[in-house]
Amino acid sequence: MSNIKISSTNKTTKIKKKNKHNNYFCELKKDILRDKYLYILIIPCLLFYFFFAYKPLYGLQIAFKDYSLFKGIEGSPWVGLDNFITFFKSPYVFRLIKNTLLINLYGLVIGFPIPIILALLFNEVRNKKFKRTAQTISYLPHFVSTVIVAGLVVNFLAPSGLINNIIAALGGNRTYFLTQPEYFRGIFTGMNVWKESGFGAVIYIAALASIDPQLYEAAVVDGANRWKQTLHVTIPGILPTITIMLILRIGKMLSVGFESVLLLQQPATYETSDVISTYVYRLAIEKGTYDVAAAVDLFNAIIALILVFAANKISKKFSETSLW
Image 1 (cartoon, rainbow, N blue to C red):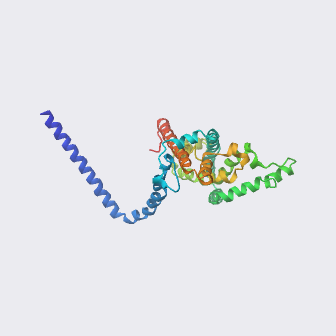
Image 2 (cartoon, helix red, strand yellow):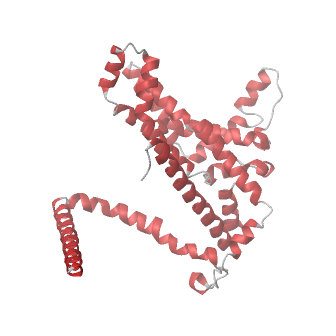
Image 3 (cartoon, one colour):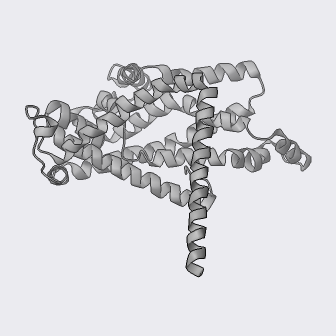
């Protein structure tokens, strides 16, 4: 008797699930028909991701092959983890990981808080005209090509550049900063802070706009001055956004934009400027060892994924804010 009841319950559950799925697809069909023009607009984005993000994943298999241009991806023999072992046996592996982590750490400690501070400062400006002008000026470097920005930095720091002219005028000695390994990380971080801070502040300005004005009014009634309002209303209001941006930033701890490094580095500064992405570039483009380069890049991506998962889990545990 009990078996008959269990069987009947299971059948009812299956029917409910089937009805739920049918209702879901019916609703989806209605939504698509109703908003068909919006769905058509999504198609170019989907095609972009298909061709430039998902289709190239097929080529990742060369990380496990002895890849030959003449044999192609399919014809090249499998070699297991040999390409990964080749990378880890490289005399440069420790230097590459150390430099990548340190450059990202500089960016995290110095570059991450600056857009937040900038957004808080913009939020305090009451003169709208001055505010708009300052914001526009801070955004502009983001739209300038990396090549041009790097060119400006190289010219400013050249022995006959602006910085050295000022040092010489003050009685100091001229220095070719870009050939000194100890200056590279500071120069790279400074350039990226100048280029991206203004644009990075946009996200936090948007988050600031979503804070309920009644919270400020309540704080004023309680006698809070501007500093106390910032401390107890503004910062807690944008804290979830800061957490999400931090998680995303941590996921890039082993990624450095190779074009910026490549444009600034000199062979004399490889000791502090050579990072994983420039090493991959040299392996693939200069030496033609695409299989090892793919293995290094895959290793980089796996570590980034682990870091994002770990940061997300920690954030979820302590702040209840997470990406998923």
